[in-house]
Length: 145
Figure 1 (cartoon, rainbow, N blue to C red):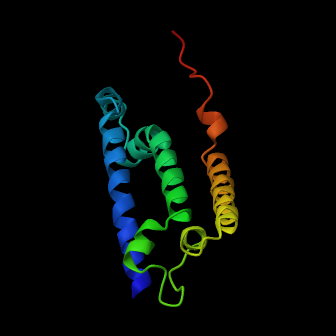
Figure 2 (cartoon, rainbow, N blue to C red):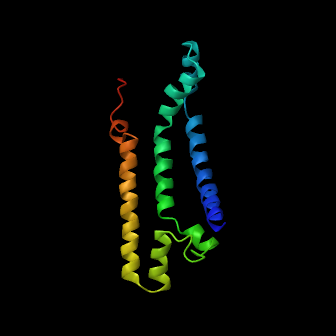
Figure 3 (tube, rainbow, N blue to C red):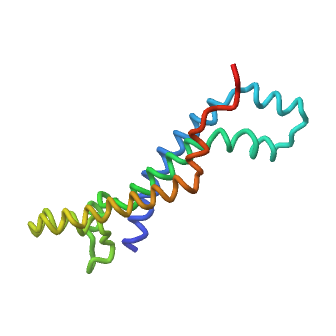
């Protein structure tokens, strides 16, 4: 039961920020693109796959990476809701590092565990950058002046 509460609290807190970013990104897509697609006879599916999703690639990448880092390094809600208990049932590596460093005064061990969390986040971020084809995203535009 405690795991469910922690999961729901984390999802609710992270989803709201992502929805605001996606809403702003969708509203920033120029209306001319929709009108041109309609004139060309594009279906709703092709408008979504050819106009909307490519326009949302940067915001989706940002949201995915920042939420993933937040999930890997989360301890805030767990500390507030369950304090890692009962019997370390909801303890994550980040919360364990916090407890070792600040509750038990094992500063070196807590710092080492925190470094492991950072390395896990770095590896997952690099994997997501490859998954989103970041190298292709940062190439200059093919549109000429």
